[in-house]
Image 1 (cartoon, helix red, strand yellow):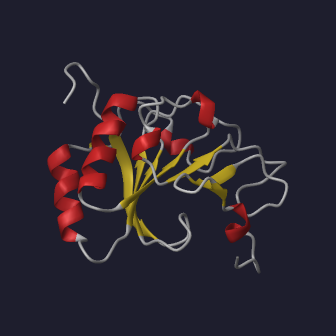
Image 2: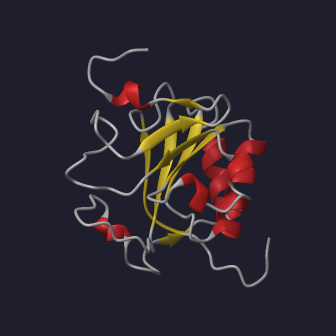
Length: 161
């Protein structure tokens, strides 16, 4: 672990089915988001320092608890602390699970050190007029980083391939 690294803090932890198509994901919503997108549905994540610390031991315990039940771990934010997030991504990779990051940043704004540890990536700020991943005109992009394929179509009702 990197010394002087601020810990990641999460305000919610859930098992989710819709955020990463085809995966059952353990999701952590981190606090401290600096983007503060107007109309954000997770504005409670803006406050720095709120929530519980996500320690390496806690994450490993959750992965063990959900072994055989989840296929992916989704991090909603945390990219503003790339060293801490990279540590968590490495733990998930070592457990043989897929990873996903939801960020309001664009891909080129992310720390290069994170990308090798990610399976899926959702990028783009929330812009209410354009909608989210289920909107055909959204600015947000959901990508399978293994193949480079864009997967936005999987979020639009009625689309299957």
